[in-house]
Image (cartoon, rainbow, N blue to C red; front, side):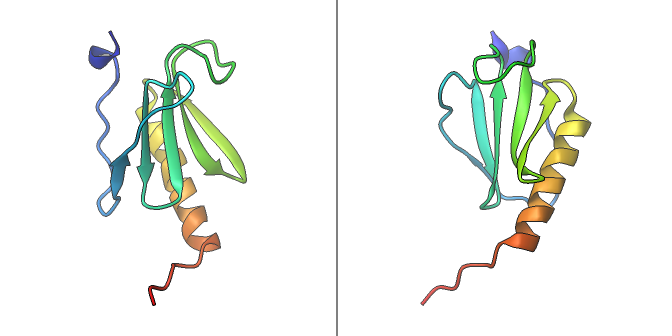
Length: 95
């Protein structure tokens, strides 16, 4: 059912997207770079939004949410999370 309802997303240049298995009822899940996690809850199993929504973590030390079709808001939340993670995380050094 959701395949035709999930909107297309044009990601920013330079983002590395890794599709990862969803959990606890999420329909889709992916990571952006190393630290930003995004999932799509279409059944309101994981939150209390009342309709399908994306959740982005971390955003301001918590989570950010955008309705499923609010792709511009989703991308803004991802940009904020990526920026915060780049500011607060030291890149790992390989020995």
